[in-house]
Every structure is written in C-alpha cells, then in structure tokens.
Amino acid sequence: MRLVIQRVSDAWCDVDGEETGRIGGPGLLVFVGVAQGDTVGQVDWLVNKVLNMRIFPDAEGRMNLSLIDTGYGMLAISQFTLLADCGKGRRPNFMAAAPPDEGERLYNEFVARARTHAPVATGRFGAMMHITAHNDGPVTIVVDSK
Image (cartoon, rainbow, N blue to C red; front, side):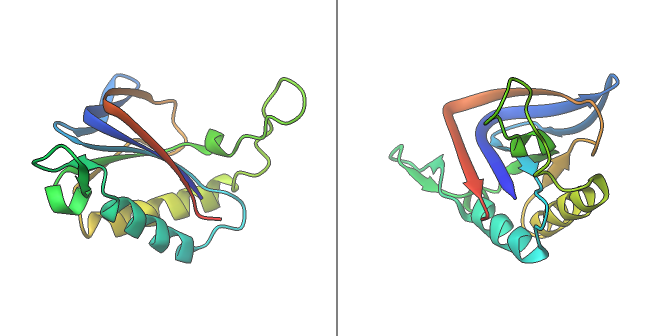
C-alpha cells in the first residue's frame, strides 16, 4: 500500500456535485493506493503510522503532535494511480494496483480501522472525485508499506 499524506487546514470531496466527505478544520488528506498482494497487516501498520505521525505543530511551532494528539480529522481518498509505473513509454502502467474488489476491501478496512481512533471522512471508491484542499505548510509525506 502507498499513502500520500497532506497536512491541510480543510479538505472535502465531491462526486457528481454531491459532497461525500469533509473535514472542516485542520487535519489530514490521505490518498490511499492498494497494490496487488497487500494485506490487512499492512493496513494495520499504515493506520498506526498515520494516526501517530507527528506532523502538526506544538505550542512552539515544532512538528510534534499527531492526529490522535490533536483530535483532528482525516479525509481518506482511494487512488489506484499512486501505484503507477512510469518507467517505460509515456503512458503510466497501473498493473501493480490491486484489482478493484481487493482494492476496495482493503481501502474500506483502512477507513474502518482509522475510524476507531479519529474522525474519518471519505470519497467514493471507484468514482471520479473532485478533491479540494488547502494545504498547510505545505507538508506532504509519502509512506509505502513495502
């Protein structure tokens, strides 16, 4: 699995003009890419990593607080294109991405496990989504479970 984590002041997702998820204040926008062969063990590791990653500023301005420390929310968006291979040619190859049913299962598992510790809003798996976010910092971190 691959995550792109962005610290945001707010973020939301629209599908066909309908808002599907929003964090109305500070938090994390997390793009979730599921690869072939990924496991629930990797989901657990990544959820723990995201929830406890110290990327929010403390009273002295140091990145020292986590999502759990702050009580902020997360907007989790499925994004198979994170697994693109651009090594040959001009068209990305997405063969490393999990098949849709497996990708959806592990994405939903990621969301469910994260929700046990923090507020989590979502997009809609497999839909064409429009994401609006106000990056804070900017702070963007890529985490790969492999």
